[in-house]
Length: 506
Ligand code: UGA
Image 1 (spheres, rainbow, N blue to C red):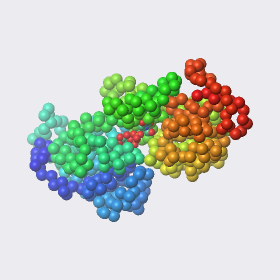
Image 2 (cartoon, rainbow, N blue to C red; image 1 turned 90 degrees about the vertical axis):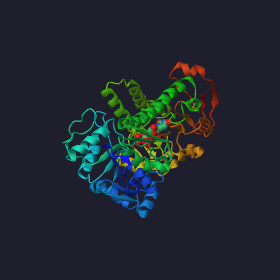
Image 3 (tube, rainbow, N blue to C red; image 1 turned 135 degrees about the vertical axis):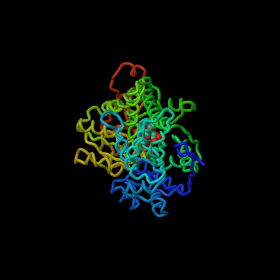
Image 4 (cartoon, protein in one colour; image 1 turned 45 degrees about the horizontal axis):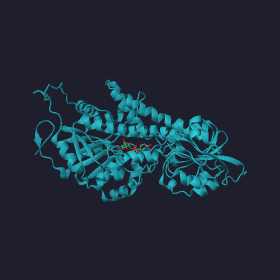
C-alpha cells in the first residue's frame, strides 16, 4: 500500500503501467527506447508528422550512436509505438515522461510554451491516475506550475491551500495525478550508453506512489537514486550543467595562462584531475562549449538566480569566458595565416561535439561565419553534421565547399582548422594531410594532436593552451614569450617551396 499524493493510500499495479514519452527529440527518443529495452510498453508521441513517419520507417531523424538498432528492435517487439496522437498517448498511459523542448526566450528565460501545452493536454485527458514526469530541463518551480495548470484545465477548482495544504471539505475532488521531476543527464553522442549506465537517477516527488512508480521503472539500472522534492530535483539539473560549464571555462582560462607562460594545459588538466576532488572529466580546453544545453541552461539558471536576487557573477564570468573563446581562436588563425582574405581554409568538424550531427550553438558556425566575412574560402568536412550544416550554410562555388573526406578538405588548403574532436581526425595520416595542403598550417581548436607528432609530420601547429610548434618564424606580439624562447636559425627542410633560411622558434 502506498500513498497517492493526497494523503490517502492506494494499491499501485506496476505490472500494468503503460508509459508515454511526449516529445521524441534528443532526450525523448533515447529515453523511450531505453525504457522499451527495460521491458516497458512505451508509446512515443510527437506532434511532428515527419518525425513519426521517419520513426515508423525505422529511421531516427537525428544521428545518435546505437539508437537506430534499438528503434528497429522495439518497433518489431511492439514495446515501442510511435504516434502523432499526443492526446491518445496521454489517455492510454499512466506514466507520462515530458521531453518537449524548452528553448530560450529572447530575455534568456526558458520558453515553457511546450511544457504548458502538455500540461493542458494532460488536463483534458485525465481519465484516471497519471504520473507526469518532467524530464526536459526546466527552471525551478516549473513542476509546481505544471501541477497547477493541470488542476486548472481539468476544471477542478482548487481553492488556495490552507497552511497544511489540505483541501477544504466542499472542494471538488481532483482526478488523481502526481507530478515528478526526473531530470535527464544524457549526453548527445552517448545517450544510449548514459541511459543504461547512469551515475545516478534523481527523482523529485511529492508522494509515495510517484516515488514507487519511478523507482520501479528504473530498478534494473542499479544505480544510486537521489530522492528529493520537486524543486530540489529541478535545481540539481541546473546546478549540474552550470558546474560542468564552469569546469570548462575554468580550464580554458588556465589554458590561456599556460599559453603565455609556456605550460601545457593538457598536462595541467591531468595533473589536477587525478585528484578525485577535482576529477578528470570536463577539463578539455578548446574553443568552448556549445550545443542545445550548456549555453541555454547556463543563461536560464543565471536568469533564475538573478531574478531571485542571488549573486550569480560567477556564472556570468563562465559565460563571458566561453563567448570569448571564438575570438581568441580566430586571433590564433589570423596569427597563423596572416590575412584570411583569398586563402583556402579547411575545416574539420562542424558538430558541436563528436558523435552527433547536432550543430545547434556549435562553435564551428561562429568561426566559419567570421572567416567567410574576412574573405576566406572554406572546405568543410564533418562525418555526420554536413546535411544539417548545409541547411543553414548552403554550398557556394569557390566559397563554401563540402567535402567527402578530411583529406579532400585539406587538398590545396593554406590552413587546416580542427573544430570538433571526432575520433577519425585523431586517426588521420598527418603526413598525407600535409602533402595535400598548399601550406602546412594546422590550428587545432580541440587539442586533438600531440604537438610533437604534428611537428614531426611537418606542420606548423597551433593548439589551445599549449605552445605553438614548427613555426617557420615568429611574429613578435609581445616581448615576454620571445625572451624565453630559444631561437635557432636553420634551413627548414620541410619547406619545399623555396628553401629559404628561416628562424625556427619554439
Ligand atoms: C550536456 C550534459 O553533459 C548532460 O549531462 C546533460 O544531460 C545535457 O547537457 C542536457 O542538459 O541535456 P551535451 O550538451 O550533450 O550534454 O554534451 P557535453 O558532452 O556535455 O558537451 C557540451 C559542450 O561542452 C560541447 O560543446 C563540448 O565540446 C564542450 N566540452 C565538453 C568542452 O569544451 N570541454 C570538455 O572538457 C567537455
